[in-house]
Length: 329
Ligand code: SAM
Ligand code: SF4
Image 1 (spheres, rainbow, N blue to C red):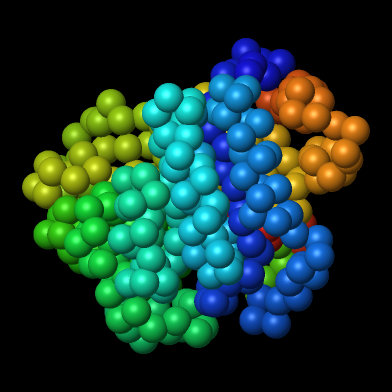
Image 2 (cartoon, rainbow, N blue to C red):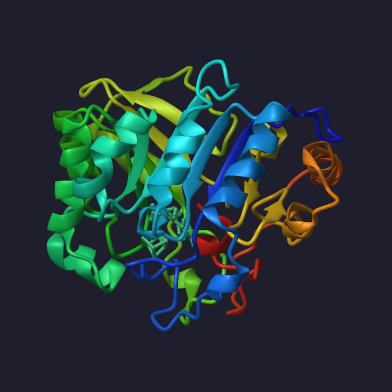
């Protein structure tokens, strides 16, 4: 599956729900209105759609959200997709989660074929964690992370770099990740969705962060590449990787290999653009068979734009109206 710029599309991120049990300040407003349940694709519909993407050459799928692990019955989807790992065409099935459900679900994720997960945790300080997530308890996420490790899952910690909030913690987080065998990825805030606040307050360029980190740690070049926006280095002292996701200050679009599907069946060809294709209508149209569904997907991929243009301006308006929890991070 090639887009108009010759990029091979092999990675699908699927937001299985827009709901979440937390309310991270950079991601959601506290009083979010969520989609009516009737608009959501069923788990069976999501599995059929993912299957069509796999048939077209997608070999990595990441389930995300919202919080993917709070969707009722979601393990059924993991199990269904897990059966396609290997000869079924899928190379890897992963998940991005806030970790709150992992003590219950980590073992089943491993059994379904998941081997690596990303857990979002912006701070190791319980008070800061409660402030950033509004409703979260650090301990619950930490318990989840260690349950995942015990279940045999590789863990990467995602932390959003927030000015004045966690900016003095990165050394501690690098050491902690090193101690427990986790990779760490730092993410710049992206202007997605109205969050009832001013993002210019939160934005901390990772170029600054990296410079500070390099004063205390030896950062070695890493060959690790995902086709995504993260650039990786290895922390010599811990042997673990550190990634920097810098959508605002670095353009990563040339190597983009991914598209994003929402829980309502809308396909976004670019995280930073509004153009989208509706896959729910053809999915629910009895006259459209699997071949027809693949045709619809291919025509959407043919519209994948060359790149994004996020701008964090002085104005309060986000440059992309939808929340990250809709498209999936
Ligand atoms: N709930 C899961 C979680 O938190 O990992 C999955 C969905 S969440 C939207 C995926 C990732 O997007 C998280 O790592 C989160 O920190 C990040 N994220 C959310 N809003 C963001 C924003 N405005 N800018 C940058 N990253 C954001
Ligand atoms: Fe929920 Fe993840 Fe958004 Fe936090 S970042 S509010 S955990 S979807």
